[in-house]
Image (cartoon, rainbow, N blue to C red):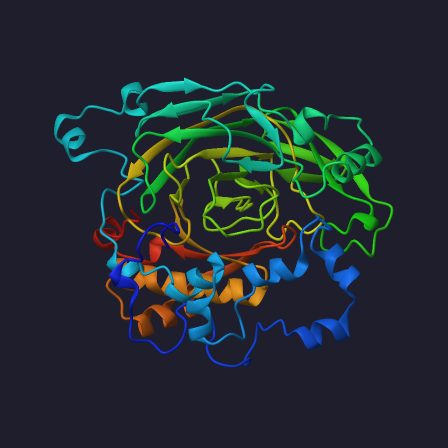
Length: 449
């Protein structure tokens, strides 16, 4: 979906009577959050608490993030970004293709026998965390870029900050963390580095982010706020809150949760994204958006598969792309139910950015050495599941040459749909498509951007 000042590509005008990403017509089927059921089941206050208790207008948020139960014509007329985006769908079938993200050697390297060198990283930029580069809990597009990079360049982030502008440190009690959250209403706890501009990036492009190095510090924290803050999946069950600090064994890549419980580590960035599109989420101020909800700009997707060696493809919505990151994790389980992963800092986060011109993705796509991962994001978990499925079907039909019905069947018998997280207002589902389902020659033909 282009920015407001762009014309919608003609490719989106299709013959289907129903929305490509959501149910059509009147309210029916699963995944509908009807207002009469909501009001009968819970009070406005309790619902607000379950949605983080951040200071946003709940009715306005519903208007941005709930699409089910509207007719297609109403969706097309809707001024909200999400309504229009849900209507047009990802339209993967019309995208052009380019090089595979995980090709270990280029054709020239195969002929000459030359190996990858440091030159493949482009120019390497170092971005320190300090008062000028880090901001609490927002994607702020009103700030001038702290750096402008070229496509192919690498960015190194040494000694990143923990939550609350580095105030979360071993020994800090849960009461202090809760006070920090309450004193910054509407903002996330994340220490967000950025924005970083990418030269020549324009709406309709796609930014490929390659995770080159992810090395955490030697400690991590898992916490749930006191129940009164309304965060996490079960705030009403645990009113007292808790923070648990763990030492990280980086040599063995594990952490001792208890004397007889050991957790393997899998470091990744919980939040990495671009400037969001206009109208996606009610801003705290013009151009300033909370870092809590993920969306078509990626952001706080909390996708644990985005570990070292993975790739994330993100649609560009603003000139310069404007890249932000934060929310470092040592490991996370799908769902992230208590509110947090094992939160930490990074000794170094190192990424490479590659710009793909005019691909016109609607949603982020991830890739690892073993899977293609299609995302679905919505306030309604059922709608997020539907979106992930439809995105995955479009991906397979456009990339692997399957009919949509065959893609539907293949996803049902051989692919997994997992709940990314349920604690960031916008819930996430990711469709895991194993690469080993496809013959080697077909694998090489299936590329994301």
